[in-house]
Length: 154
Image (cartoon, rainbow, N blue to C red):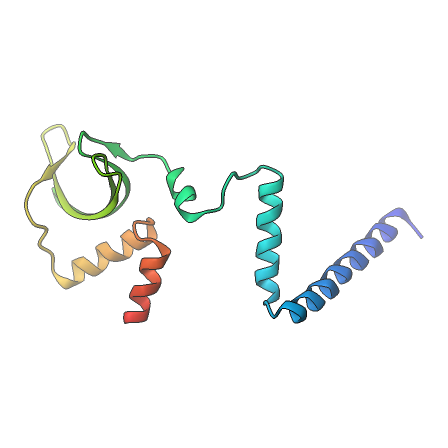
């Protein structure tokens, strides 16, 4: 038997051993195999110090700040651009309280083509709101808990 065939047989044996072990453990503790695999991978990542903490808040805290002002840090931003008006749904972290909030805002482009926040309400049609909402979801503005709650309501 060649070395390649021997390695392949060993990998097949190891894979079947893992599958059998997952089956037994899954039945014993009544937890789906996919969940057990997720836990095992998470433990490996933690043990190997690939990640420090898998808490959702900690993972989001590592995201780079898109923009910072005296008032807040802009963490995520969904956009809808219509000529010189930019409608946004933003996840911000308010500096004075440390709280994360969702802000509906709009910006206009100034002479230098920079975005300038307009301190007035955001008015959109339902179609524009849906487009902005989809982009905001795709950009991670909303937490998984919020998305799941919203999904349950609909």
